[in-house]
Amino acid sequence: MASSDNTANTDATTSDTPTLYSSYPFPHHTARQLANMTEVTFAKQFLATLDARPVKLSPDHVEDPRGYPARNAYILPRAPRPMSKPNSRGAPGSERSLRVTLKSLRNPPLDIKLTSQPLSTSVLDLKQKVVEESGVPLEKIKLLYKKKPVVDSKILKELVGEDDGASVEFSVMVLGGAAAAAKKPEEAPAADVAQGASGTETLESGEFWDDLKGFLLQRVRDERQASDLFETFQAAYKSKR
Image (cartoon, rainbow, N blue to C red):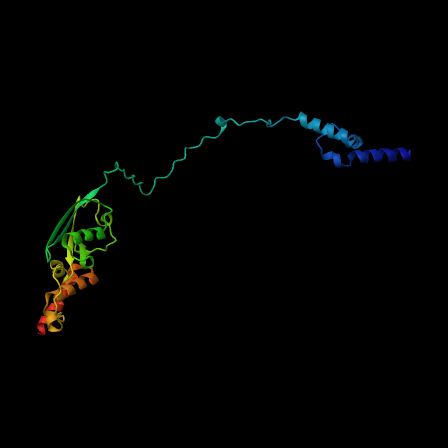
């Protein structure tokens, strides 16, 4: 009787004790039945149990876009500055050109008019035109635009704006001594070369004061200030005579 009771207790303990297979989804199998299965049988039974469950997504599942949640259209924010319109290029040969006037009221008087000058024309090109018309050496010529000297490397496009019209005027300044030299290019040198003027004779000559004024304008780069300085120097010299 004791043996029978022990066997019953063992069976009850075995059936109630959780095993490795008790956690798998086989509610209709007991732990003892799972323990007695071979590995192959267990694998087949496990896969069959999984196949019996409902399939959530098929391998070729494609989501219907109409089932997506509604979203508002994304709109780009407004630019802080409006985009500039591209400049329309005209046909070849219709580029903007300017009428250039080169004028000098002093010695030598000049009034040179140049038509259809492209915007790529440089100040040096304009000075070459003055040389051709007057014979004055290039290094003695200064061009002024709006009463201010301009360097040789500048071009018309950099000086003239879109609203300045189709014509532009430059003032021509010839440094002292250049005009006299241009008037007498064919005179032969005298046999007896006299020494140049010096001292008071130099200060009394107009060439000296023209050179001084040209130097001041070249250094100060402002016609009004250069003129004020020139008058100051000239007045100081005359007051000491």
